[in-house]
Image (cartoon, rainbow, N blue to C red; front, side, top):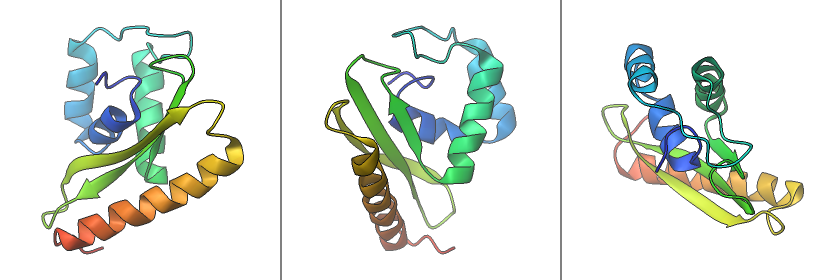
Length: 121
């Protein structure tokens, strides 16, 4: 999945070391999939910091028009983000109210899974 516009890939990139994030962004062309795709490297870095701060990523038609996604990190015993879990749906079905509800469920689920993998806050 493209790391500049897919929620799951953005989560995985957001939790890397900042030097590694810069290297990945600078080595790859940021492809524009829709008019909402993030293609500016500085904007993407800011976006990734926000994802890490909030604990989840949101894709609002950045990869495909008509599709939204929410993704949260899964962390292992070594405090490494090793995966993400994602909810994807049609834009018309993921209203603002549904997004809040699904984000809460997704974050709780990713935290439970992380705990089962030995992660401790």
